[in-house]
Image (tube, rainbow, N blue to C red; front, side, top):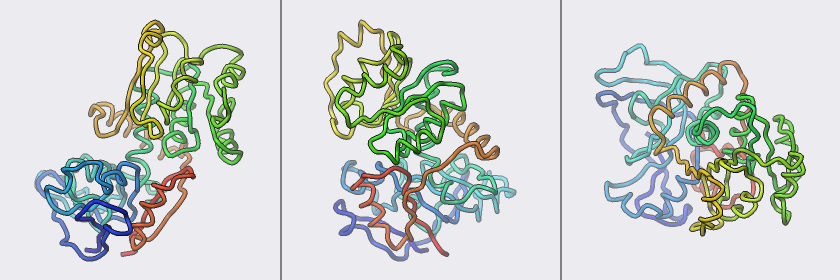
Length: 329
């Protein structure tokens, strides 16, 4: 099969190889999926760059956890009626070597979720990490109906989905954006207000938008960099759900201030989500796709021959939306 892989850590252009690898077989409890689209996420880039030093101990790595395609074979214990199903897959390269950056991937059958016929494979490749992370951030700490949520980076890969999950659940949403185009994207989704997180003291704009009332929850893309502003706008007993802190990787916490506000700090990563939370997200994603109530933001679609460029795009940043690589058979 055609595949992209790396055998050493380093720059994408130097270590990612494109060529032929053995086609995997579906083992017991597994399905074999012919991949049409593979999603590229920051965690994939970090793995290739050496963020997980023991990753290559088991041999070469075919990267990427998210993807979409069609089930072509099943292993023992899996209903043969699954053959031919359109699916989106997640956690394909979590705690294992072979992910979705190939024509085929075999993985646990439960990690291959039916993709409605009206949903493109490119969209399916964006659901694992972006949509599930957003779902966990919004719903991990209970019902948000009637609450006001602040979602930073609202036009980003996760933020874009988080806005929609919150609005669908009956919350009021205020988003942040760093430019006029992203501001318009957030407004189109139905947020009540958008503030510019590049402006000094943007927390004051949040409170102006709420009429001075603190927000109950914050979904945060840059926890360390934004913490001071967050503490100025969040209510007592509020919840901060953060899935990233790239600018300030090891933030210092003002513990006493946070303690006296009775705040909950929740960090979120898909791989560590409880299974019940994953299934909750999958049910809601399936319902939303079937009802066509989710919008999707895909920034770049590249052929698999440009796998290195897809990683470089994630590293360079400066855009919102997902990056997807495709396979033409």
